[in-house]
Amino acid sequence: MPGNSADHVPTKIAIIGVGNTLRADDGVGAYICSEIELLCLPGVTIRNVHQLHVELIEDLLDYDSVIIVDASVAGKAVEFVALSTVETQAVSSSHHLNANMLHALTKKMYGKNIPIFLCSVRCENFEMGEILSANAITNAKKAIEIICNWTKK
Image (cartoon, rainbow, N blue to C red; front, side, top):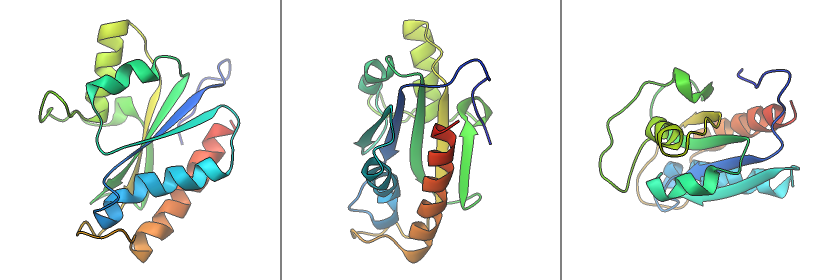
């Protein structure tokens, strides 16, 4: 599991839940963030967005680390990785970008290398609806445990 170097413990952490809560399991990021927010972890700020966008960059500049939580259709139940290990994907529009592009733009525009982690949660139901599948909830609980343990390091 990733962590910061021993000489740098993050004091301000942003956790961003990405997804549409009206598309069933796509809302797992918001669900995870709402559960973590209830824990009142010191130094942790929660934010939910439907998608990542360039305007978000300025909001992240004051944080020591950022965790982006998003639903995934493939992979392990939960994957928590430093962004540098995630493959780059193309940007689909000027208002929507992926986590790697967000990280790259933060470095390029502001010269700031904020450690960004991606927590992908495997889900199965992306149909219209506001209820998470049992699988999404099970995987979300694993993600919450991983994120909470990481924030305590």
